[in-house]
Amino acid sequence: MALIKCNECGHEVSDKASMCPNCGCPIQTEGNPSVNETNVESQHEKKGNGKKWALLAVLLCIICGGGYYAYTKLFKGGSDKESIVELTPEFINAIQKYDKLGSFSEGYAAVLKDGKWGYINIKGEEVISCQYSNPYEEYTSGAFHEELAAVQKDGKWGYINTKGEEVIPINLDVQYANCFSDGLAVIINDYNNFSVIDTKGNVVFKGKCNIEQFGEEMVYEMQQNYVQGKLYMPVESNKYAVYDKQGKKLGEESEEQKDDFIKQNSKVLYTIYSDEREENISLGLIDVDGKVIVPATYDRIGDKVGGNVDFSNGVLVVMIEEIGEDVMEGQAGEIYSPDTKYHYGYVDLKGKDTFSDELKQKCKKSREQAMQKIKQQEEEMFTDSDNNDWLQGRWIGTTASGNSVEVIIEGGNFTEKIDGHITYSGSYDFNGDMLIYDNANAFWPVDKDNKVLTHDGRPMRKESAGASTNPSSSYNDNAGNSNQNEEMRIMSRLHELGKKGQSLVSELSAMRQRGQMDPARYLYIKQTLIQYKDEQIRLSRELGDEQMTREYMQQKDGVLQSFRMIENGY
Image (cartoon, rainbow, N blue to C red):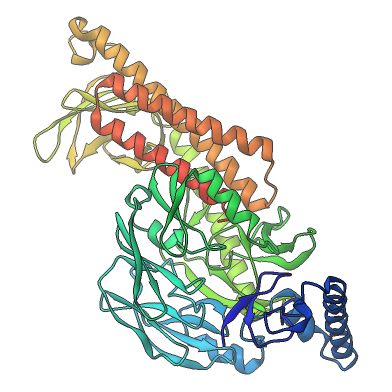
């Protein structure tokens, strides 16, 4: 038996099947008389009859009370293994013992328990024990594709079948092993080399790549697979080498060309959206017509954050958060807590999920309480910031390693200098216990009882009541005043660009959360953020700071990669 593609929907089916189980189209093979090229009309007639019989089968199932099952299986989310997960009390009870759940694929889902991954079937039964690893908690263990799953154990990779048997021994000392597609899988040997293997583990061909540019975790996010017989491997920024299944290099294409090809050959059935009226858990699912399939009641849907998803085996993995007591607000308005508990479950096409009403209410209440605490923190910070006159001026001190430290606070501007070099210049916040700056990425502790700024546990000395009132200070030294002023101007502009960029990122994040992406506004944000990074790179070069320049260049690469991920459906 071999697998072939359905001419109607592209679904892989057995060459012995007479009809595609996904769309109802008759399967046309060389041994099938209906594919006689001299009888095209007969062929179309049989194809049409096949669809009619498929529709009739659905109607019969509806009449007999099995309409939802047939509708889901044949048209909406049926798995390759002809199985639908039914969210029965037995199934719901069975999955409660797991710390994390993965999406179903081919009748199986990866599950995490005590730091190890295993697999359950559609009944919730653990058919492969939890014994495999994953270097990143954010990502689930490999899903089954073409009856094989990539797994890791003791730092080595391999492939198992649905019985848990090692088809390709777990002894591959590589960076990452991707899932199979078209009978081939891409192995990332290291950040600059890859191999393509067949289902027996034989190396079909090898090649060069450049995944290091995207960062270590992106190895897991990118998921390099064949799409319609073509494989795209990154070779440099915005450039991909294209290979066929035999390893012949077909040429090179840009990121945009790659994304266009993948989109044209991928079906999008459902899109994640959020309801602005819902102040608590807000993610849901709509179909291509904008109809709500799953109400906006979750913190996460699918294995990845955002983008398009599809049901497999009739269900999707979802997550809700129970926020802890200690909370803080992130840069884009997110709520963070080190004590947050993440509850995973599944939802079906009817919107039924595996969470109890009690748990959902508990999670909702925890978010409401967290939002109240954030509001209270903001009010306290505002009150404390009104009483910070004593902070104004020039403070000097030394680090634990003996470096000179200078801090200048003028109105709402904060400047930090280490050994005479400006390391930060821009706005700040004061919450009474610490002086916070650089988009909440850095802070200075404050002894508010003694009204002293501290560094490394040492009190700093206040040199003047205002930075400009001491003509003998190095800050106002006439000999270097011109250079200092120019350096201050550049640092101020860099900080301004950073704040503007963060504002645009927050706006983009809000649009994605709402599921209402304005194409024109999106393009403006993308172009503007890239321009900001280019200006920051240029200004850091004017300062002669090579490390800062490299950091801004890396940030630009990160921005470009983020937009590529958004445009690719992540």
